[in-house]
Length: 259
Length: 358
Image (cartoon, rainbow over all chains, first blue to last red; front, side, top):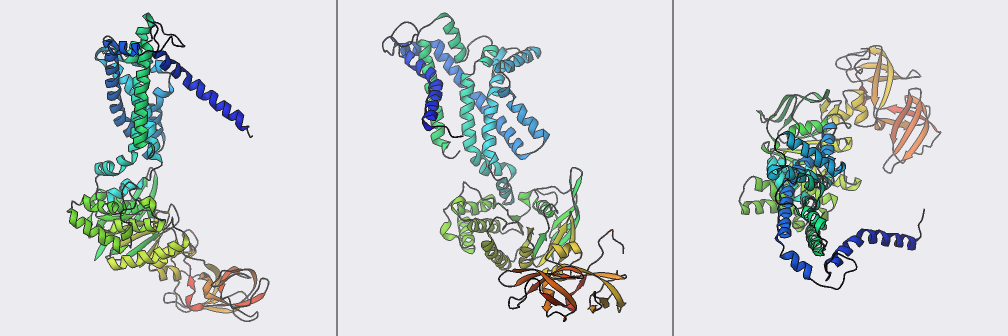
């Protein structure tokens, strides 16, 4: 069935509007000169960005989120790549079990993963101490994204290149480092960006597992908005959106064409 | 001197025995093809030799040294893959240099040997190209050069021509064969294409169901196949079941057979199992067409296919339909009655298939 082009175009505009409007509203609201988080903004100003930059609570939260995201991304890259290599090179029930296991946090509601981890860590007597539970949660949340991206970049590949390297005298490790790793680098980069952003943004897992002390940015924002309603929250969001955009663009410029 | 020696090689996948005891000796500098349909174990055999698959039982020796448990990188082999398996992120020169770098040779030695190898496969102008910028034939030559530049003890080729078009495939056959003879390297070549195996090899190893059915020169495999299955796999075969009238010498050969219609046919080949009747093989080009009423057997042309160099006929006879190859100069048409003459000196008796009565 053929859909008329103008109708299709209108549909497309609607979808983009639906997706982008909230972001546009938040960004515009952050330049608000007024005292309350309103839209349309009451005059333009950068005062709330200035306020935010002097607010140690938010700066700490951003730093904390960035470190947490970087650490969980690093761990996810290693585990996710290993799982992807296993899945692509093996067939049958074992490989399928690995795939479902790794993707489970993506399939289950985030809150279930979080509650399950909470029970588990209290059961083994660690609870939410030392951020171990929070970190584990973030690794689980980011793992599927590394796994899916690396799997995709492996699947189109010719398996025999690594074997060819072996016949030429490369050990298993050297063959991986010199041949497979460069070939899956675009998938690793995309997976890393996704993982970082997911960890940076995720709420449910952080909310339930964060424990006492400093909290990731989304939690800090939520706490702030419960008692305050200033455009500072929008300013924080704008900065966070900007960080995400920079990351995605950088990854796309570096690897986009190869991936 | 035996370069490669397979001793009762067995490979078990789960509960299925993919290799049921393969024993084979490949002489120094010999070109041996493993030929068979898919699933016959030829690729598994090659993978075991390369070290990609562990053997379940038996031994693989290079120069009388057991290498069955060695890792692929320690076996000193060069291998060409069906997909070529070139490193896509490296240039042609870097692809060739890889194996030499693994051997920790000096930069100058590597450059020299890479240059020489590129000359050998006529790819010098393409040194800085990436594989995807090359044609299939060129990629094939890079793969060959990459396998040979490390000067391995054994060259393994896994259906290297399967992805090329027919014309290029013919060119590459000659190219690989000439190169192999020039370098003098012991070569094991896996293919399912009987023409390829015949034209290139010193010896053809026909495999079925994880076993060697026959290992012999191309001429012998074609003219004196060990079984009906081999006969049919390496070419077209007419099988005629004929009663034995007189036995002159079972072992040395000499049987008088009768064709339908009573014409005698002498079989010169030995057939120790001959008993009442013999199944004999006649290749299509070993039967010639004559005028009706002449020849040893009468028939009628059922089908005629012109194929450029010759004409393929299917002739209906009292022995069933026979495939005959004739010259294009003969004016024979579908529906014509013809006479058939057999080249008796090349008739070959078929051993009874296992399970059949002796």
